[in-house]
Image (tube, rainbow, N blue to C red):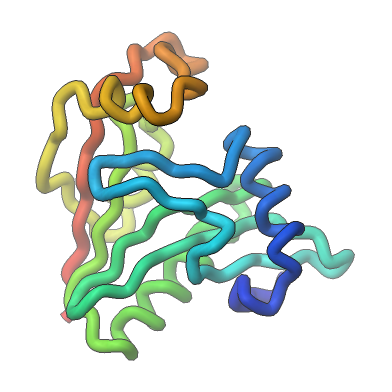
Length: 159
């Protein structure tokens, strides 16, 4: 597995990755509406050239926001490697914190990030209802049967 900046990939390939895994490259969260295929990021590439993981982010003064993280291969270190790549990159570019938003139903992400030093610092009640107004394809209930309604911000201090 190699990790490369997404700008080294064909944007159509990146866009198709988001369509296949999210239904759209559009991400709607409390911090904004993003086209993930246009954001900076890193991709984990298998020997065949297939994208097996992808992370996108935005660097702002002293802060990095992770907008998306996807790993096609679970429990093989793909997500951890991508997250570490962004944390290193962000620190090298003067960021002191990294933040991200996930939904209340995403227990896998909440577990993943907390194990890696992220803390839940804010809950946005009913934020997903607002996001659905812009992106109606967001489901009402997760595959686990949990109503999808709130967003949670997680933060990690880098320095």
